[in-house]
Image (cartoon, rainbow, N blue to C red; front, side, top):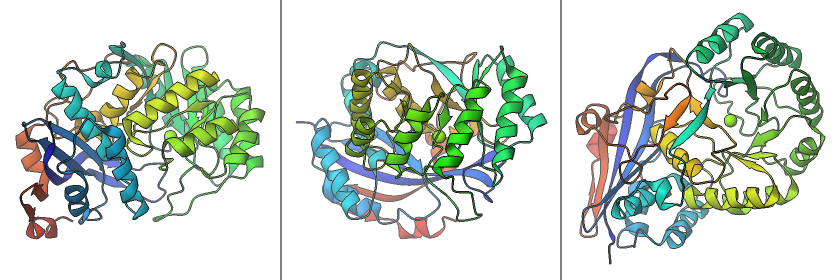
Length: 399
Ligand SMILES: [Mg+2]
């Protein structure tokens, strides 16, 4: 039986071409993309990769957990491995993002692209452009025009103002300007408040209802995360009230159990769980199935790392929703562009006139560029079933 034999962890930090100010973290300016990368290797030499955003050294001790809980296990027993990820979570370590690495191994072992192993038949995904920064109305119009000229028919913008009139003015302006040419959606990023560098408004149900009314009046495609993520009852009330589909679900880190309960409550019209946060590949596909049965929509969130994009692309391609829904394509130039996000890949994951062609290589279908990994990454933990090797000196230099 094939078993997980070795594990490695890397801290990767690569520069962005220009500063990027994510709307969902007020006061933050990013000049680089940083992530924690995991590589599992089986006893017969198959490797599986994944990654998660990292501020710095917060995953310093993760290797000890990975080595003790996963080495010697079969990579095919996803339920057992998921149970171990859950055990880690009980101890305060949410790490659903490592589950896709096991799928990478399984699909490589089967010599198939992951989405095909999962039963998917969609080789091309239609995309929507997902912007990441707050902009003044004139700049938003320019941004929408640029994405339209690149082939996108739908774009998602962000709002995060203290004054709801400003938020409403922004969606109205760009939706009116692009009317008949491009659909506009909006992400309010209220589900998971990030306020470490600057404060942000917390929407009430009443404010969310007024915003949903305004969004319906200007024909927005959907309204994403207009309420705090744990307010399930209020979310269900809003979804029943709104004339525009209410979307969300990306970071519900309890995974399937929480999302299934929210689904039964009618919390969202469009479920967007992210495999890296919300239960891994398997649990997200289980949610897609429930969405199908309930007549709801599904398309995963993917804005995190290069692996977040490709893992969720496989989930979407296998979800059964790729004919009717669009997949997120994070694009917020000049700062957030796939060429920088995918710095350790041999080939960045680029769109083709608003479509993404699923890679056909086995597994996740991405190839790590060892030179770039050496340039941008530092291995800080390595263990096998026989030996654990810490590199504290490597990790000490990580800023
Ligand atoms: Mg979102």
